[in-house]
Amino acid sequence: DYVFDGTGDAPRATGETVGPLGAYGRSKLEGEARVAASGANAVVLRTSWVFSAHGANFVKTMLRLSETRDALSVVGDQVGGPTPAALIADACIALAKSLSNGGPSGVYHFSGAPDVSWADFAREIFAQAGKDVTVTDIPTADYPTRATRPLNSRLDCTTLLSDHGIKRPDWKAGLADVLKELNV
Image (tube, rainbow, N blue to C red):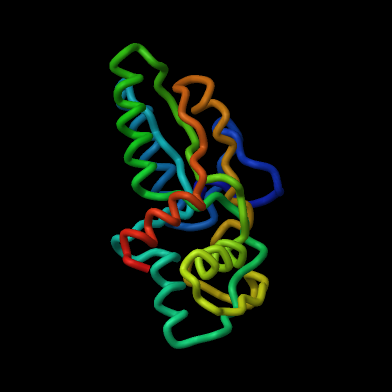
């Protein structure tokens, strides 16, 4: 999602004009360009808001904060599709099989459904984890970060479905799996 400028409120299609807001997005776009320039029969899979039971991510941060706080302010004007890392791995395996059977190469989008704000994602984390934490929506301007984050991280995943038969995953089910793995 960081290869786009974050404007608008519609899901971004794979062929739309890119416009990274910072170094992170520019490095992702450079990687895409190098894959394309290689001439390899390859797929670039763009995704957003990745979470799992491993490493640092939003789910684990919210759970950690819920241990010491009963109220949190969370950005409510950035919207995207939380995506379970395990399902990204499954999609990559399915794409490799599809490519080996003559499926098309190119750039595709894969993100969880439905699209939500970070604040709504946090609310679902707390609801599924049984944590009594009040979430207050705040604008991005009230939560400055070193890297500029896109407001619109919605990804149009229709070509992944039409070309490879891969559907957008239900991130809420993926969240339940992660919470179970974390013994929450």
